[in-house]
Amino acid sequence: MLRALSTGGPDPAVVVLGVRADFTGRCLELPELAPVFTDGLFVLLPMSVAELRESITRPAELAGVTLEPGLVPLLLRDAGLRDEPGTGPHTATADTTPSGALPLVSHALLATWQQREDTTLTVAGYERTGGIQGAIARTAETVFAQLYPAEQRTIRRVLSRLVHVSDEGTAATRRRASRSALMEQLADADAASAALDVFVRARLITVDQDTVEITHEALLHAWPRLRDWIHADRAGLLIHQQLAHAAAEWEREDHDPSALYRGTRLDTVRSWADDLDGRSRLGPREEAFLQASQVEEDARQQLARRQIRLRQALFATLAVLLGLAVTAGALAYQQRASASTRSGSPAPRPSPCSPPPWPAASPRRPCCSPRRPTAPTAPPRRAAPC
Image (cartoon, rainbow, N blue to C red):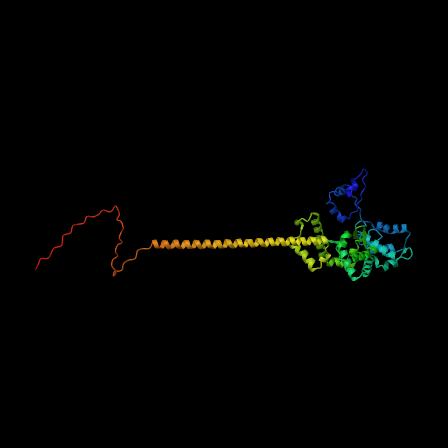
């Protein structure tokens, strides 16, 4: 859209973007915005104390509203500032106002306007609001008390979706969300819309077409209840944010399985969703992403178990074959040793009392042995007659 506005038609429009300093790093990741931050960047420095004072008195003068004497110095003092340059706890850097001072002063003036006397903003009215630190907290707590218990639980879920926390330990910041997507994530959209409208009327939440965001960044820090919610569930908020981002990436990549959660990361999200009531905060896209991740993880674990069984069966078969081979080798070695022992043993000696052994008759005489002549024997003599 920004590219179309700045380049479309013969007379391109002049696009002015207001970006907080802590979000410039994300803008540099966009190719269309990177040149703007090198050529057309204008750094708006924090207000000085004099500029902040003028931002209070000048609009009142234009609107015909009278500021009671002493109200502006009281506002500046409660914001941690001084009228005199070079004094006060936050005036070490060129008398600039601290971060978040302007939203606090703005809401305090709004609360003081609701306690005005005719067209005069008084010190007494300002003090009835609880001062600059208590104005937002008092307004938020009053609005919260008007809700039913179910609506209070719903608004807590809504506010948690409008808060961005970082894993680097930095302070929480507000974030903009789609109203339609926000309503889809809640069980009773009508009750959620009614609870949201109460905070909108109190100017604590801003609704613009289809977007919802917290009006003042100071609400995250000045309202003790919301601050405690963020502190108590910081880990859960971070898990939910990462899950929502991963689900959006998965949908943008046409449900690519490689974008799904697995392993330890999936176990962490499942533990948060099942044990810490995180599943009630999930939207349809996040629920589908988590279910697809679980199905993919189950299939992967089943395949891993099948491969383990196959390896175990292979190892068992190899072990049996190895045992058979060793056994066969041992038997062959034993038989060879027995045969060698029988062929190399001496013949047994005859006993003196036993008859001499008859030589075994040879079926054939060797062809090379000569035949000895046999001497003729004389005929037996007859005995003479007596």
